[in-house]
Length: 428
Ligand code: PMP
Image 1 (cartoon, helix red, strand yellow):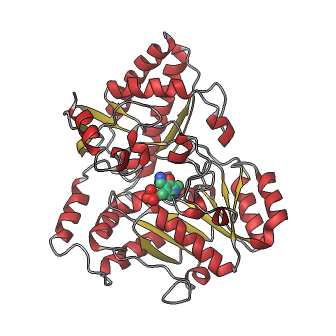
Image 2 (tube, rainbow, N blue to C red):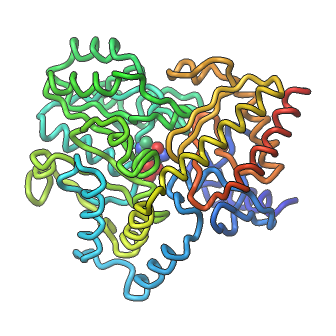
Image 3 (cartoon, rainbow, N blue to C red):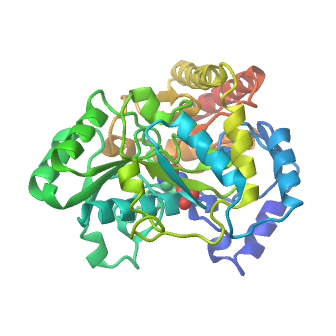
């Protein structure tokens, strides 16, 4: 028995399902989850000492690769002087200033410890600011696991095929309106029916929780206009896309100014950090300036801030995103060519350091199209790649990530291995 298998068995008697976050359990793809021992750059090593080229990157944070020496040095240095004080430190100001400089729509920003906290708090402040109850989200977009958002949510839930989670009272869920991504008419209909009670629209500007779906031209602009017309707050959930698809996030790429932005993943460089921020007139309603309450014992703790500060400094290096985007698009082009040669229908896409591939012969632009892709083929491909030493997200609805530490050789090596796997799929 492999050590991963042993650990998985052992974990089940003390941790629900053996994991601390459901998608880690390989529920969709089946088999034994890999337990990792260490990471360095583009690589991970499992508990059985097998090496993998990693395209999960801790689900996005590892944009510099694993164990970046400068990040590790900063974290160790700060940790020597205490892990957390529950009182303000200069590091919090430095990270807030860096976020503001990179995301111009943010006047004021508050640090939290996860993406879930960031979106939950952004929704509360939008509701408090507008005095309205309803929020509008998109089917297949995932914004963390707070009650209001576990309404036909994607990510792990989508994998499990559950439209909602038990434990979310119907009274909460009724305030969440669910629209279709890339369908502006649908959003307009909901605004016509409920516009005067819609506090906010929350959207992943590039949806990374139904594989990877980019906004059609005019979609995000349309959301901006509807929010302006009806006095609703537009929230871009950039927990995944922030500092990932470009230095200024998806809002920089598409040139749209949301009222509030949520951040996570890259902003903490691998430490548990999230953030929400935006327009001053909204953010100053937050406690202690205003009446809307939000707090956190470990929020802005110095070790997490240190990792975030170094990470945000390093992504500002000249041509950082050009190089990242070139490698990521080469990876997807390589997958596309290899699949076509093998006769396996595949549709691929990438933006910055984020990518998605669908087992389909069509371009995929909606939740319905994404869920109609060949999941069985994905599962087989995932396991063939895993066997070959390539670690992809263990679910077909998750985007993939390339880091600055992936070399051209890593990318070419991955394409060769993928070609072999596509050939195997085709010959079945
Ligand atoms: N928003 C988005 C867009 C996400 O992808 C995620 C997590 N994958 C979250 C929010 C929730 O973040 P966390 O898991 O840190 O709570």
